[in-house]
Length: 304
Image (cartoon, rainbow, N blue to C red):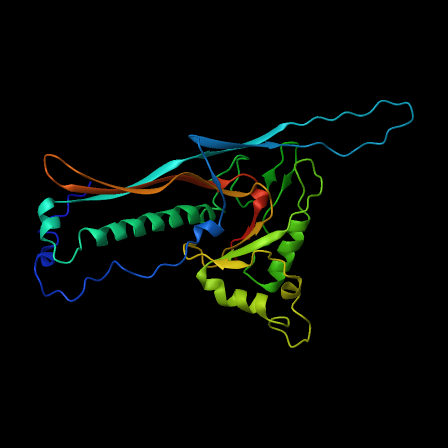
């Protein structure tokens, strides 16, 4: 635990003549974690999403013969355990009283808010940064992005390209085809569509060329840009500055239960004084959880 901020810690704050205090106040990117998940509220210690297999195909019924009856089964269970994130600092009364620039009061409170926001961005992006890592698994026992997700009723399915590829026109087209052919747990066709493309900053210019050019990229042909003309991404494409892999790219689909964030308690600030030391204590807390329910909510490639 770090010690309190004292007059010695910020000695220059006690004297006139400082032109500027720098290093804390920077411009921030707009919130990006909201683009990674569908946000829901929660009033419990944790939330659980439980899969259902659904029914199979209808069977032919001969005249006078009995109907064939099917059954449903409980599927994989995904638990969202809400975690409290908190940060604070302590200031001595003397440092607070003698501060000539409000460095240890208001400005440090602004820094606290900045740290809390940054923490949420990093925690949220970590779900994507670890999407290919088999050490982090979901309810079906596999990583978020995997070429062998199991079905409860048997068999496997994939939410990644057969051959890992860098972001390109051909890779996106194949991804759209693969997404459109995904089936439910009983092997029935479902209408999944790409919703948004999520990329690291390193792929911004390539994404612009691929998705905004009127004609096909990198050819001398006069073919139209089918990706632009068909407008496959209903929610556009977005950069996330907290993605750590410069080659990995992700496509969110319209799965009704895909990537989720549960907000258990919104960020709140509080301040109190210690009776014995007269130190001022500042804190911020927030409680939330992030993860995925149905891996069909995301299709991705780690790059070539």
